[in-house]
Amino acid sequence: MAITSLTLRNFRSFREAELRLRPFLLLVGRNAAGKSNLVHGFLFLRDIARSGLENAISLQGGLAYLQNAALTCGRDLGIEIELTLPIRMPPLPLPDGRRAEIVPGPCTYAFALGCNERAEVHADRFAMRFSVAVEGEDPAPGSMELVHEGGRLRYALDLPLGLDEATFLPPALREARLGPNALMLESPTLYPMGLVRRALALISCYEFGPRLTRRLDLRTGAAELAEDGSNAAIALGRVLAHPPEREQYLALARDLLPFIEDIVVGDGPGGAPEIRVAETYAPGRYLPAETLSSGTVELFALLVALFFSPRELAIFEEPAARLHPFAVGRLVGLMREASKVQPLVVSTQHPAVLRHAPVEDVCLVSRDADGFSVLSRPADRTDVQAFLEEKVGLDDLFLAGLL
Amino acid sequence: MARLNVLVEGSDDVRFFEHALVPRLSERWGEVRLIPYACLRRTAVDRLLLGFARLGEPYVIVADIDNEPSIRAKKRVILGRFEEADPATIAVVVIEIESWYLAGADDGFLKQAGLPTYSSTEEITKEAFNSLIPRSYLSRVGFMLDLLDGYSLERGAGRNRSLAFFLRRYAADHK
Image 1 (spheres, helix red, strand yellow):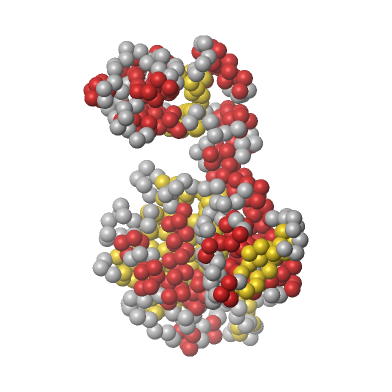
Image 2: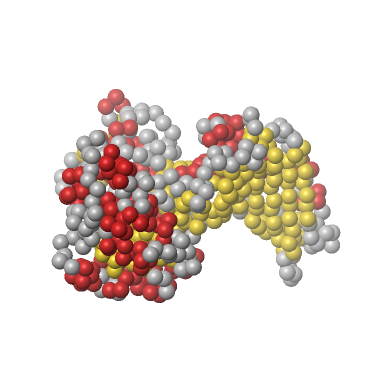
């Protein structure tokens, strides 16, 4: 997993909260508890990485909606993430002639925005810990810090075993220019922020919504599944075009919907791609997607998102809202399978989802007495443990308001 | 201070407790937790009760007497439904939660709404309560919220003995 935690400060309904990620994480809470605001924290980072700070702020509705309404305006808005990066460095020479392996450790990227008329970058910092391994010796710890202040960049290196700074970080890699009010995250060339940017740009948040079948009329669209599922026919056509993937997709679809004989994507009215399904009840007779239920088509799109659209982090907003409880159990099982390949965050208030999830995977979002959203892990609470030991289901605890 | 777990039937009970009773109960208890049990399976409620026992936390099951002839009979019904329930932890509302709503309502509001002032609400059924709702209300929830505005627990205890018993048993300084 690349992203291991997210901390929000003065962001929407949060005063300060840290979310520790797991391969499969369920965000549960009542309406207006702050689940979507937490998801927006990820999306804000994603939008900065993809489109820059100014556009990201605009996509969130402007600064006024990014900050907490109850906190004073003088307080900075801050976001911090922890992640591991796929940094691969060749063995580096030491002064004594030996060669050292650099093993990257956890990284932290944090920024703070002062929120006056426009956003002002008040802090912008990246830090990475690593270890330097030499054969026959214990690994020695080292660290790298990159600080951006008013357009100027400063690297601070703590290198063990006499490792040379210029060898570890060649001067060419240090050359980058930033505007005084830009974030390092916006730079595609700044090392190693380019890797952070690439990871965050690969966050997706899927929310298909009702009446998906009515929206499947796109003639053109990206091959990758859109977050609202509107190009599901195109994205599914891409999957079904390759026989090995087609077989896997059909097996998964039949696991969720045993009556499915076949799924194809062909030309519909006006030439737009159209999903057609043959059921075991009437073999060989293909029905167009618009005659299927929204829940069925939503499952088709969910499978594409889960298994055929790899992401650094995939977030699903209420994926089970239109599913039968039996299908919900199957879907949660498939989601946990998919989370072995790509980390998943699922935001839900559907008790049937909780029925099939271990308590360790659950994060509760709620409001405190002052109205700030807070995060808690039911698994850490003694009362929840006592109830679970008495075989009370998580879904019942949720219904009873005891999570 | 200990946490009191109050198991109530449904949303009308939750609303009444949140507005009228939890502030008073909180003077005695460190935390008051409302748990609607009508949406839970019997076994789930039983397991919750075992959980409270494991945690050493007190609880009270609040139930309407409905058509049962006596409080003792209603307790028997609850004990038959929830095997783990302790008879000492069952509080019976006479006759239904609507009776408690009406008992402590502000007399001025009742008069303004064209409603009588009852010396006792122990005969007020859900149906009788519904028939009292003035036509100007779009929903009974709006009427209930207005009854809770200016609500007096002391007045309510004087007009409903089951509410008075509940307060004596679970509230701090109620005489």
